[in-house]
Length: 630
Image (cartoon, rainbow, N blue to C red):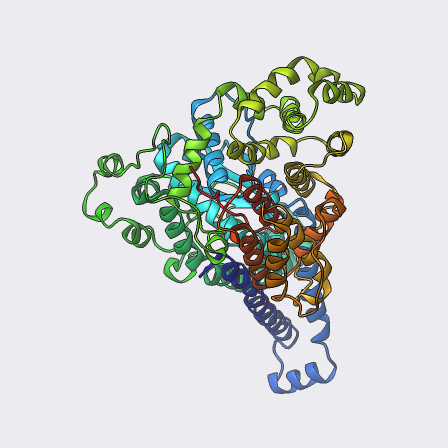
């Protein structure tokens, strides 16, 4: 199953979620009506009472009350999670990690995630740490990859080796790639509704017991008894919601955990890493359990079980640890020397790359390039680690600071124009604070290999996202003005502006819902994207036209002309990509395959084509791993 099929199934799981949710609501309504009916018919003939109950439609009142409670509880949680992954990370008690930290475990965490981001083509997520949690756990959250956050517990950073942490991070990246995050966040909000009655029941019980500790008369004693009876009934009914909530989570989550484990092994080529992390959870006193009041809410989205569950085999959101470990590395179940096994199976990363070794190289077909989307493997990770090693410590320090990160973006643009003219423009634009460092940054950027520029941009994005909204808008405005300042809009500048707009602009369209189920409404956008991709190649004009006509037939039988590159503006390209991002996943696959065919049509892959293709796929929420070229 490829990335696009995973995305399609992840969205289809929403239908399964809605079915289970409606079934749970129906049963809760039945239970509430049954309790109210028996209370009001106590001591009477049940048959007569039931006929009177139905005839007078008394059932409508408790039904309406239940629906309103569930609706408002879910709506309230939806509103609290409007901020996506960042809102959930803060709700869980996460601390936004300072990327300039000197703490060794935190630096290890940053480096592992940065390598994974480069290798997978996934935008670098925002990083959080749950400082109060000693259990070994982690999760990712967000409505889409461009807004993802990754959260790990303090216990995970303290207990896990680099290989084990890499396995956990690879597992979480799989959830980003497979489209699990959006459903996970929605699941929290939806289940809040069906769990609300039980929580109200606990409130009534606390009220009843609180009253029982005071000295009241008979009248107050009756009120106290009513509180206790209502509370006990609602708590009992609440367990219906809890049961179905757990059942929904188990139905959706378990198989995805096996898939994420397998993806982590494919990614790292080191089963001992993630198996070692699972083994440490198994042996640790705290395990993966969380002390947070939201442990139940987040149980389906974490790396391990967040709390002990009765009827674990039926209602656990994760497969048993022994089963997960056995599928990854059976040696762990026959030998307790986990550390020795980890050391024996570590993957050696070359210090430098000297040439093609027979295993690497670009995919030989457009289908192969498209199939690499969302399917990074160990070759991509090793390649990314090699790229990462080529960034100097000074440059990485600048990447982690928002001010100098802006300077790096400006330097990437200045590399294609007159240095003095560009610096003067920025000075007039109010970037005086950067003037002292920009010249040195420009010298460093000019010495970078072409293939390092896109990974560098990917590392910059999480820092630039921390700018406040006015700061983002001013930065984007300055970038746009600098790009057009020399009247020479290069292809790389197209790529840079599109990525920055996609990640930082307020008006960027979020592909939260599928809007287009056919190509017809977006044919003009497809024509624009294909034209830009084909014009980026170094082919002769007649070959470009032939390639264009071959690929446009996938989407329309009407004859449309190849657009000249000089007629395209970045704002048009961004707007088209935003609309195309609302295509259904399987339609996106056809578009991405056509773009990939434009890259390899002449048998030569140029760095500019690769940058543009990866930028387009990133804007379509289809992260492409680096094309491995030495």
